[in-house]
Length: 248
Image 1 (tube, rainbow, N blue to C red):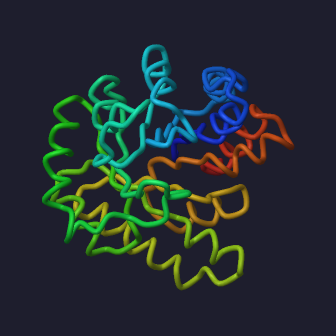
Image 2 (cartoon, one colour):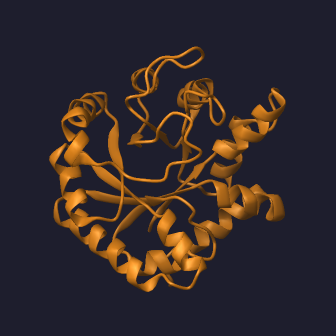
């Protein structure tokens, strides 16, 4: 069965818009876990517009499930932000997902170019694994790029599914889906686990998982939060879990 890690960045975004404490990220995490989610994802950015470093510190202190912390490992300290690697050093989450997003970028929209950045990424992967973190690299569905993720020592790759979601919505996903299948097969062949995330929703998640082999975890935030406005948070989590369970 594929695990569901709920990304709570959009819950934090709503809270931050008014500068208060509601909705509480901890409350949202507790609600998701009560509904059956397997883990929680946070992506603290230097601009503090989504999940905050304080959210990561709080959840790391009590979360009775896997915490996945995403971000750019080259994001250094700024006012109100100790640096992404420092957040990981202090919290040692179960999984660290390294993402090459630029400062001010609206959302993650491309995977690592490890032919260019692999030498810089490798020592950070080694450090995180020494801290006890499972390391996942955010990657495009390119089999050759996936093989480089194994070369730098990652445990998993997270396939960037934004292009798949867009193609699916336009009814033009068949050719692109074959690229995700090939990327996942290459990952499995070189000993990497496969995660997936970005713009997955109740419509496209099932077809993706039926086609792409061995997806261990999906990280879903924006769509699940939108669904929660209509269904309630617990019901939204359960709707996604129903798509992750294999048929009897």
